[in-house]
Image (tube, rainbow over all chains, first blue to last red; front, side, top):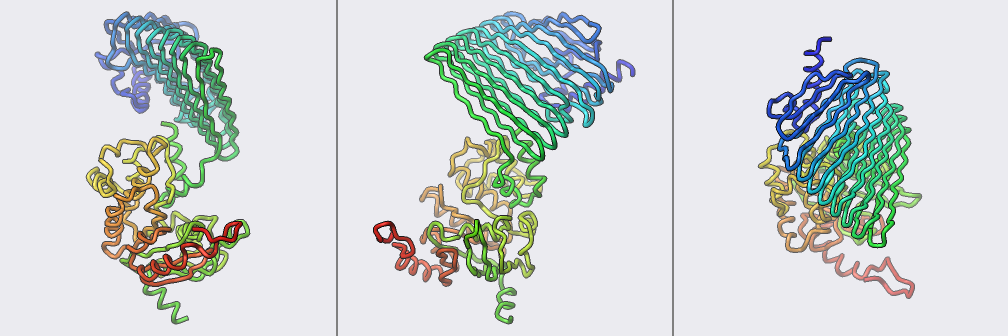
Length: 315
Length: 253
């Protein structure tokens, strides 16, 4: 397949994943498109530095949003592979300097993957008075069992915020093992981690979110919405450690099981400082009859009702 | 039976002598009611009288399937129909405690109700009827709404459904008294063009707004008549309730 075909296919699929992905390819948008281990498209604007090299299995990249830069339009990162098998390893270091503000949208597109490993090792450093959102949307095929291994470590500076959003609801999940560790190091820093996953067939969905509230007055919300059907399995570990005065954290996990799916949730809250407050809520179960019957009384079939409920939950 | 056939012909809904069991207890005993086209029919009774069970049985909830008797809607035997079939045939229910749906906006919820394309103006009009501003369209039908707000949205939703028969289970609960006059006018609007409303209520002032009423007690229909006659009987005979006595033998208020 020619590079131009790979490029246009990845962009076409990415544009369906929302978040204004249709801007991918525009001259006034910062973006990078990677197919397998090749950088096949890139656009950089002042205030953003992307230093990326191709490696044998993927790419290594250092991305910097320089001091005080405010990027109005989301930065698009498209990582994909259109083949059936292979491997893609993305290693990245992102630096959001003091006073900078940016939102990154990562489109991870593997529509044909059957025997495939997609691994991401990320390090994110957010300076003081900065704001950074990293939203990752995956598109997988309906068949195959792609292995997905995203691992990231984030450090958030004073008066800064980090939003991490991971969505894998289209196609099969495959075998997912995601690990995020965030240290809210600076005073009054804020962390918001959200995961939305829809497991089917014999998919495996593991989520581990660890938040360390080390900064005075720091706060965090960890929210997971997992729907499992058929024979899929899921586990969620959300740990928030309140280790500073005035630290506030909350873990909120809902897992819905259908068919023979199995779900496990471990919201762990730890207050290692007497003036910290960390709370949690977790619910696992099938969709309540009253919700399904409520929509059926409006004329939806049982299947349509479940679809509406699940789609709302995974937004 | 000629008498039964006549009732069937003239009624929009005809519930014929149904008995419903829940956990080996009869929650409805030999219940018969009819709802006529274009009428508001009331089911009045104290808490635990079986009113909501009757609403669920008519809506077709699987746990309220009659062990005996039959139900007819527009002359068709619907006794073995499921909820969806009944809803598509023209029956709907505004629940006493409507479910909440994470991630679903009020606008989406109202669109689901209409089951067809619906413009924003219609949705705004429905919200206006239940005294909610159009800004609610972008709110989520989740726990961020109060019980009263959720209830009003449910009423707006069934109004937009334009069903032939709308069952309102305790429509006044969670809605303040000042709004009652508007809610009553909403019921009247629901009966335009021959459509009918079945109101489940424990309040005699709500039941008095109906064209006809039934009084329920301990899973049975004990009285059928004009709304005023049923209201008077309820006030004189059911308060205090002679069926419910506390440990001292005193009847409960």
